Image 1 (cartoon, protein in one colour):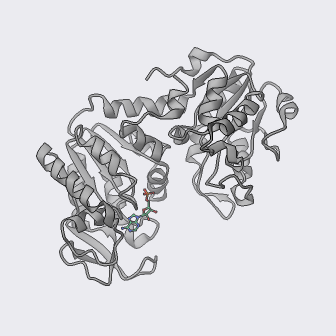
Image 2 (cartoon, rainbow, N blue to C red):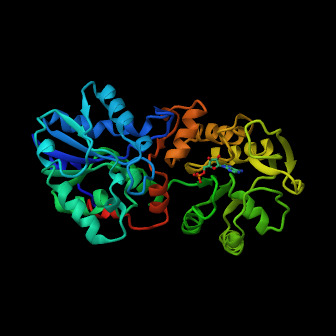
Length: 394
Ligand code: AMP
């Protein structure tokens, strides 16, 4: 899409405003997975090597314009400082600190507090976003966008700010776009897409858009039960989005007409309740008890999915096959992840949650062709949507 790269911008001794995606899982003040921080290092190190000073803008969670101490970027600034072996300062305010920000010296890194503490960041009102962007623009000479996980958001620090300064995309965004282009333009075939996660509403558009381009679609996770319901099956207390049943029916019919292999599980791991300690049992999809809920794909289905995945030359996977956070319901996700590591071709894990899931299950980044940092962003790219954060950098 012709985005400008860091080497084209060639920043030297400049003060650079860098938008990163550092939205990492934090539990009780401790970072559970620092993948997104690590993924941001390449650009930061390049800027430091070019004697730049850096003002990092990032967000955490959804504070919705309110200051929430549990969503402070303090643990993230600290972790980044450890990884870079320098101090990363974190002023208390976001706005009204131009002179403090401008006092940064070459080689110094400052992180602004969670930009979503400012309601203007994600305001629907363009004038509000532009006003915040105009103030942030006084904090530096150049803008580098590297927060891939936020490029689908028309937010002040992602979109309006980029347009106010000479700009470029950082290494992470370039790498992400490179992989997504491989998935959308002439992927090696067979091309398979594996989708899971909780909600079918999040994935329906991507399934619809991908149908014309893929050879195989496999569906797991909580979303699979809307498909089973569309086939008229009893799904007990499993997750379902009833209003989407007609859309899902239509999708399955289209897939059939197009001759796409559309894989749904044949067995399910069910339990009486949504809990780590809930007693699991495996049943056929035709025998889900009315008082139980499906929490994972069954072993026969997982093996079948794995076998089909391994035949592909290109695979994109987004969303766990079951409630992987509970050990009893993590097996389907594990088997599918393992199959992706064995693909003879390009295997892409899409999304922060899926990435954290595979790392929690003991896999490493190197086990896969590529692990994307942006779930929503990569799905919207595959839906064929224009992403504001990429448009602003082109
Ligand atoms: P998503 O953010 O849509 O990719 O969804 C991820 C979440 O889906 C994870 O936290 C999983 O625990 C959850 N999930 C996966 N399978 C199921 C299921 N069968 N029932 C309920 N939740 C599920």
